[in-house]
Length: 157
Image (cartoon, rainbow, N blue to C red; front, side, top):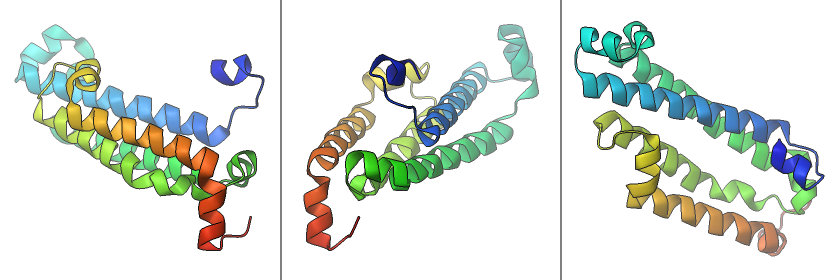
């Protein structure tokens, strides 16, 4: 919202929902890492009282749910009439495989407990970083050249 305000453009509701669900997803991944690292319920409760209410199975379900919501909200953003009009292309949807891979990678690495938290994962996991960088590059390409791809594919806006 602050970014949209800073550049004087209206914030997309789907982008706000996507950011919210990604935050939920990362929060549940962090809880899953903590539960896995601490091992037993007593240690988890001593470390953080709220962890007593979480089980690995519940967190797995919450991670899956929030990941699915983040993916769907990104898809809704990429295909919304407002986004297509704003960027003059319907091609942003083609970045979806990278979004799915990045979210799946984040979940998989979090559930394995390979890093101490989401920040460390983002800063150190090369496959995640590569997918995020590729998504960013592809998104920029689609914003600036997507209209050519639409024309080539015969997509009428």
